[in-house]
Image 1: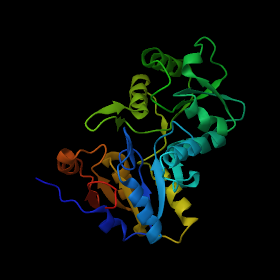
Image 2: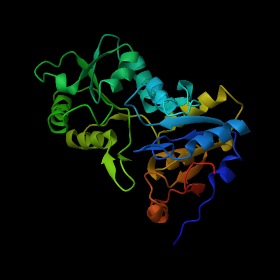
Image 3: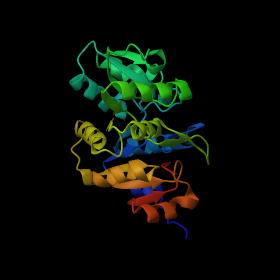
Image 4: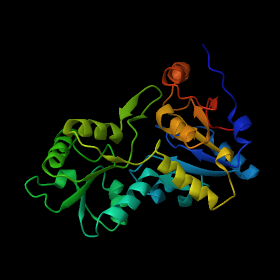
Length: 285
């Protein structure tokens, strides 16, 4: 059964603001989704506000915005980036005393969010399991920057030896690395470790309502807008679409990322997660 799709232009013109997921919607493994610059030009022309909601906690909002600007999309500025790392940063500011160390799994650049909260950071690879008294919390930030075998095992043993708050700053379980292939994301690593040690972690990012509330409050700084006037655009049913649905937003599932066109109908039917619209992509033709 073929899934009926609509043009993105015909959908987005009816809203005051748009929340975009990033990977699979605006960009992919090759770079920008071809033609996506037309979308930003159209939204500017129509006065439709837009914001990027991403579970990417690997880089700071400044670095995330710079990625688009370096590729000619100057409209994507730091103030339009809303990441799960920002929520994790606010949590650490509120819950962890200054000067305490937070261990993390990820790249050095992903530690930006913890350091911005005024805390010391220590990469898992640099931890001595016989000297962990100074470590107060742990954060899953990125799926790169460490030895998967050695450092994941070290993470498991650290969290078994000492009871501490564990934050997962990116809940994504996978991400596309080519047209047909995916890679394990840090959310999957956190799920595995959580299951092994039998403890519950604190998660930030889509589909959690806190992520959408952050974006909604940001939009309200620019315009007077209701939830019914905001469109959430994503490529994944279990984060973007269900999160937007639960928050009371209309949603668009695009077929340019995680959800392949020939599997979209099956996944929608089997999951019961129903987007308001389905579009081939977020490009305005």
